[in-house]
Length: 249
Image (cartoon, rainbow, N blue to C red; front, side):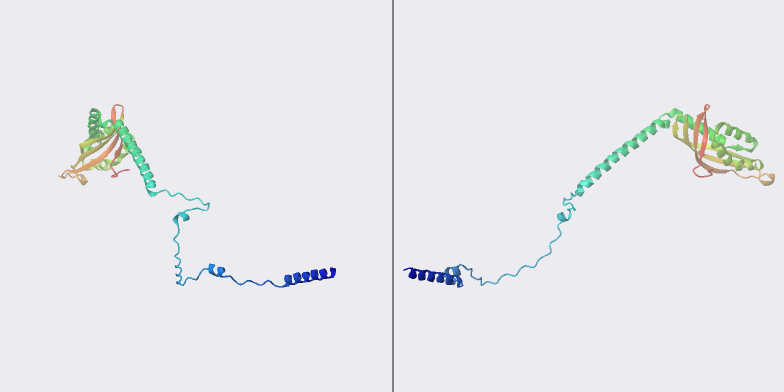
């Protein structure tokens, strides 16, 4: 009995070793696995569409290096701000100009004080007539008028303007007469004023070169200039003669 059992156990060990050493055979696919596989589609596959290059995204380009999106200010908003600023500047400039005009009109009493303006015009007309008239027989009269009615820069200006007449007057027996035909007060501010003068000048000579008498007719010439004056010692004295570029020193 022991021998028979021993043989049976040995045979079982050999069979187990043989089955472990033999390779495992792959089982053939079953019908159910074949049925589960997808069948090929007989229709032709569509061709892939060509790739179109994408246009740059303005929003993406507007992003800076930090990744934050830059805020764009609309153009109408900018124009609106500029319009408001220009409008404010225009109002301010208008107020400043109006204030200057009002301030100047307050100081310039030539527009309001008609009595003083008229008196000033009369005095300047008489002064110009005396200063720019010359008679070879009474040359001292012009000198006295200059001493009384001129001051400052006007003294030298008057001397240069009448230099030719004074030099040739005795020999030619010259007579120069200046008559004011019109005047206007441009500025009257306290004791200072500026007057525009229009005048006619008449020049006659009763003797020519060599002392011979000649029947030479008079010559006429218009004149226009402005005088700056100052009220001093009860008299309007001329401080400057403005010839508008003609004969200016």
